[in-house]
Length: 307
Image (cartoon, rainbow, N blue to C red; front, side):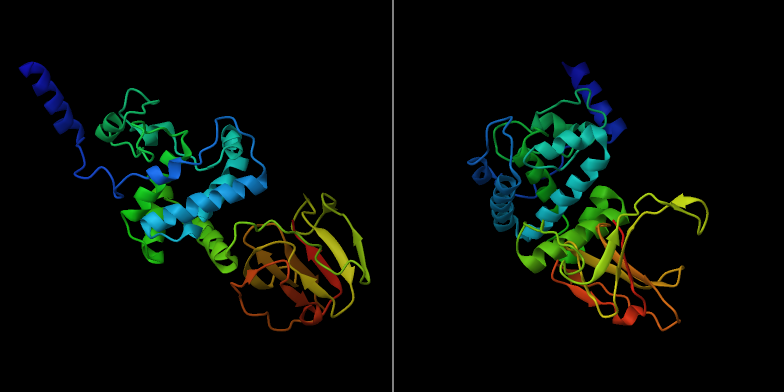
């Protein structure tokens, strides 16, 4: 018995593993969030998903002091990333779409990468926590995942600056932090998770010419395809946002076209110019489908929609 204790102690000293002084930044665990969990395998409609999200995020916000829209933003960011990684796409069928790898959840040196024991996960310095107090830290349990993320954020604080620092430590990617911050600002501005409305960029009954030229060959800047769709309209034609988003850049591009680009890469506007007027000031405006611009300042009849 003495030899076993010495071996274990030596292993802890050599590897630097230790038991943290506090298991949770939050106390008590989030048992209140356990009540409305659906049966495994439930197929969610988008409306049902948003309703359940709002309940979870609101309750989590009440318990942590972290505004609900930060949890919504993290989940939305993860949903967009899951669409890119084939192995992660099934996560978007679940209630919560946040991905945490097995190694990170259970600990790098943990011999059991499927470990759900909170004590052994803690021993091997994994981040997985038991959020619903059922004795298991399960990375497939949405409450455990949300609790783990909330615990990480709360260790840094609840201010915007502190939350951004926590996100940097979680993702180690400035673009990830920026995207989550942008999502959070949109959710905060509109006070709802339903930001799915889409619109055509010009009035349907106005005078314009539209033809899809996506994929057509282009030669400017080298042989390439056209990654946009052109709409021709008169001067002064109002152009509205096709979706919710934040305008990141507004000015003249290298092709001497006035352009606006959106953070969600789902819409933009451009027009050729005949002169070289001063570019519009950069903007960080949050846009809905009601946001409009006019073609007056573009000095040209072409509206280019970049999808």
